[in-house]
Image 1 (spheres, rainbow, N blue to C red):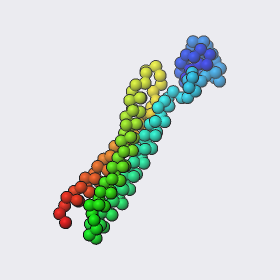
Image 2: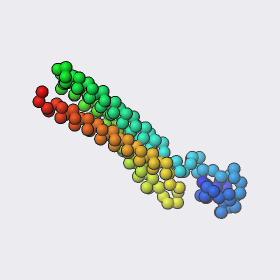
Image 3: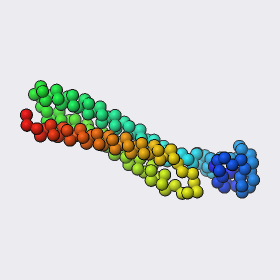
Image 4: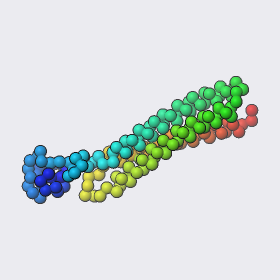
Length: 159
């Protein structure tokens, strides 16, 4: 936090500014100009990456479940398996795009945490949510890749 009288950084638990001896609790502000909590810097982007990664994971799992049932029923019914598999691969590729965005946003959040100067409080929430964004995005990419691999192997199998 910063003192509103002199603008120097003070500890969150300090009742008095050491520089100017300002003792009023109401005179303390979070940052000099932004008015936000310095421990939450970068949190919005990390949270957006986490949400995008979670949605990509859900899309990937749903397409996998629906796709496998559809492909297996089409395979048994003698339908055009190649066309159906191509459509499912397209949906899986479309779920990889937000997953990649989530991973990039997560990595940037972790780098933002590491680049925070030592004199400023570390944005730990940004780090934690950024790691979650990397996890969700990476899981969606892995899951989509496995599904596409299974589809390709099914297409290469002799009928």
